Image (cartoon, helix red, strand yellow):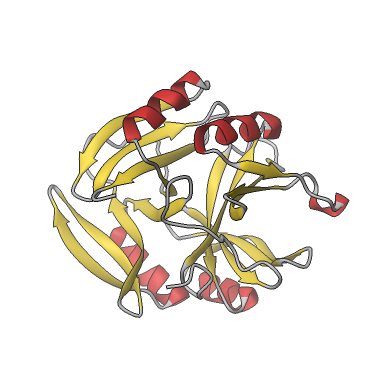
Length: 255
């Protein structure tokens, strides 16, 4: 399924308090090349590429007190219509639809549990050009304390269906478009989730070696929040970059 399809995560970008530092960190960690903007209206927004294909973006945090974070953008045919659906389903419009130069239209929301996400209506830029290979996005996952409410909300906004799989002690959910998994959902159950940790969307980048990537991230000034751990689908770790933005890496089983 194309990453630019409606209802499918199409793009991720980083809002950071230190754009030059983030460019250095992710360039070293994933082998990304940075493409500085050639348009002053882009306000420094930088595109990352891998093997000459777009994989992600990064820009400076624009509002005071906003923590550095990765944002998931889900493809849409109409950002304005998506905003109306978000509001009707009980979500909040943080940034109403706006033009991103000639590349597309975006909007930023929170779901009823407070998890922030965005939509991308493509124009000249469809979204990521590389996915599911080392050094690129391979999965997006909602982590929430209200999985049943999330099913209703995202089903309304994106027409997502769900498939639940027992993963003791929780039930893991896959979001489906045309019966194909496009993202996941992890309920925040148990003592592993700090009470002050809000609902959020996690981004996963594929790597060749989870342990080596975690070590490399720490050597570059990042931190390892969840050490390399085996899952049925691969070995993963949760990392924080030097500015505090969290993300996950995974070596997919069989790769």
